[in-house]
Image (cartoon, rainbow, N blue to C red):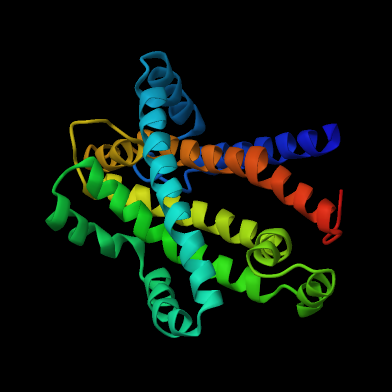
Amino acid sequence: MRRRVLARLVFVSALVALWQAAWTAGLWSEVLLPPPGRVALWLGRSLADGTLAGATLVTLRRLVLGYAAGLALGLPLGMLTTRFRPFHETVGLLLLGVQSLPSVCWVPLAMLWFGQTETAMLFVVLMGTVGSIALAMDQGIRSVPPIYVRAARTMGSKGLHTWLRVIVPASLPLVLSGMKQGWAFAWRSLMAAEIFVTILTGLGLGHLLHYGRELHAMDQVIGVILVIVLVGVSFDRLIFAPAERALHRRWGTGRIE
């Protein structure tokens, strides 16, 4: 564990050193890419006055609400498309089209329907998430080996018991991967919504990114991008990675480190 942490710190330090060296050599102008020191200075000021922490909390609140709505809608839809063939041939095809549609395409529709409101942002996150989650649930269930179901029925399991105690648990490794992908789609959807939808109920990271572009403040733009990457990696390492390891350990799949 310590070796991996040390290796990552060395890697990040090398990237920062390369960034500084490239800037010192004049490969980029300060307008296009500011030096690391200026970005660090902006991050420090934004943390000190609470702007960055407040924007991060606002964004995470919207993200969690939209993602939870996507889970609540996507998981049942995925089960229905697996269980009933008419759903698979109609709703499943619609979900595939929804997933392939870029999230930013939902922003104009959300603004026309809901205006400059929180509901518009949540709608964009929901539409950007529900397709990937539903399809992951569908594919996860279809990937369960049929012998699991036959063995369960031989031992007396049937109906809802087979679904809840055999099929759904066996599909969880693939479903969790789809949930992880849905989280990434939720991030992208929310950033698109915050950049284009301006509301007074909360300043998010997407708004800081947008205002940095408007003011030609590249230190702010780079700083917000770094924060978005850091938050995304933190969620993956703290939530999804442990859950994936636990599931693979439970079902004996994958490599356990």
